[in-house]
Structure formats: C-alpha cells, structure tokens
Image (cartoon, rainbow, N blue to C red; front, side):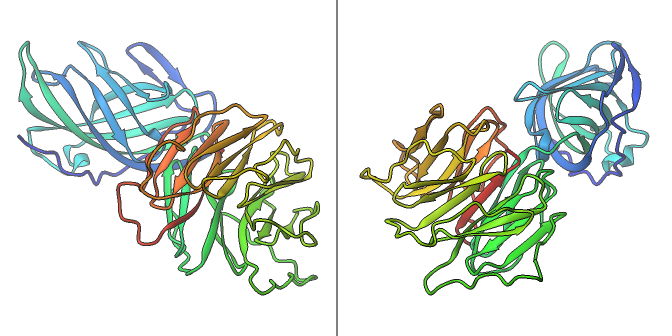
Length: 406
C-alpha cells in the first residue's frame, strides 16, 4: 500500500467574486471573502478504476474552518466537485489535473495530482485545493480504495471557531481561528477574541493585558488604573462590541473599564460569599454580568437578573456564566459540568459524567454554549461545529479559559 506524501504545493487564492463554468453550469459567489486561511487535510474513499480516475467519493477531515465532512468528485464525463461539511454547508465547483505533477511534490505515477476550485454557500466563500490521491486497493467492479492528502486556501466570509489559553499564556486555536503566538506569562487567566476572530486579548491575574493578532491595546494616559488590593486578582476580561475597549473584572467584584467601555457599577463595597470567578458583557455591551463561585449572579446596566444559585448547596463551585443571545436569560456552569439555566433553554450538561479534569469555563457559541476543561477537553452544547479539542493531548500547563467567535 502506497501512502501519499504531505504536499508543499504553491497555493493560489481563488477570488470569492470569480465565476467559472462547470459541467453543471456556472457557479458564482455572492459575496467577496473578508479574510483567508490556509489549511491541510486528507481523507479516504472509493475511486473509479480507469486510465484516469472518473469519480471519487468518501469522507474528509481538515484543519481550519473546512472542518470535516464528505466529498463527491466527478463522474463519467464530469468535472464537478462537491464538498459537504458536517453541518450541511456545501462547496461546489470544478476539478481537474494539476498544471504540473510537481504541485503535489511528486512525480510518482501511483499518485494522482489534481486541483479543485470551489465556491461555498455560507461562511466559506471560496476554496482552492491541491489534492494528492494515492490508489491503494483494487475492489470489485472496477473501483479501488483511495486516500488523499490536501492543502489549500479558504476565502472566509466570516471566521467561526474557538480558542483556549493555558496558565503560561500559550494559545490553542480551532476552526477558523488562526494560530497566534504565545505571550509567555506565568499567570494568564483569560483569553478573549475580537469580533472578526483575527486577534484578541490575554489578561493576567495582575491586570496586564497582552494583545494577539489584530486586536488593539487600550491604555488611558489621563487616568491611572486602580491598584489591586492584597489578595485581589483579575479573573476575567470582556471586550466591548466595537472591539474598541474592554473591562477587567476582579475577584472582589470590581469592574475596570478601558477604551470605550463604560462603567455600570460594581461590587467593590459589597461583602461577597464567594469570589467573582467570571464576568461577561451583555450582548449589547451596555451592561455586564458577574458570577461568584457560590453561584451568586450580579447584573449591571442592561444585564437582567433572572436568578442565581447563591443560596443553593452546590456539589462543585460555579466557574462561568453565558447570557443568551437576546439578553433575556443565562446559563451557569459548575466545575463538575453541571449547568443551571435561568430563562434560558437547557441544552445539556456534563454533570452526570466522570470528567478527566474539571470544567474551567463556559463560553457563548452558536446561540448556546460550549464548556472547556483544564485538560483542553471541549464539550459542545450548541448547533455550532465541533472543531476538535486538546483533550487527547498533554497540554504543558492547565487550560484556564477559552473564547469563541459566538
């Protein structure tokens, strides 16, 4: 059995506004891509056995926003290619021989080198794929098993995905979120993404904020940031909807605004039963929620209080809160994966499951939520795509927080 080598092909972005003719007719994209992403992947399937392969179908997996799904390429006399992601998003276009076998990094006659130019129907505007297909095992009926590796460039209308940060400031990106350099800090506590998903902020317990990618830093020279009291630490950061500011929130319930973030009140004068472990802006950015380890919920600005677990006996402490997209309710999550819903539909929990490591956060995702554990395990309770996790690897330091493109 021959295995195809990883491709180091020269990639060309196909414009999202390009129109071309396929066997099934002209295909065009209604909206130009806002950003691009390179990716790698591969898959297995069944191909036609002939002088040149006539059809080719099976399953694929990939890094990046293309995710995983199925493919159906060709047919007798056809040059149509179709990739269908696991959520039903389709990409259709044309395929053909690569201009040169060297595009696949090989001249091995047992490896078919092809390319495909596709247009997507949703978040992916376009794709250019270079495919290295290895014939493996002849089957009955003139077909053979095949495997392939691919490499390409996506034109993205919008980025979809999620990210994590560990205690040392190392980042882990999934889906449409491109890898970002680590910040090398020993006390990272939170990561947040900007709304375009091409940057973000990492906060430390001392209140330092590091920017990654295209995110901006905010520092008002006309006022000094309040010093943290003895035993007080920053626990979370939440950006404004404009990405032109953010709030830092502390374990004692203080809200510290920067940039265009507006102060809506805080808990600095209150005695708390449990320290504030998570905070998040309301969907409008005109308010924010804080949640304590005892399950107490505190709403400011246009954030709406719908109840809490503050007077309940919990099996494990609460570690996060996610508001609903319409700002009418929210979910709380405890470190054992138990979820508590307040004016929000219950989407499931991990409360009855033995976890390898505790849940450290819950983040908004595709209209609901996903949870992340300290070992990088991801538990998705939304209609959004699962792009993988770090749960099967050994992360060098515990995951402390996560973020998503919502």
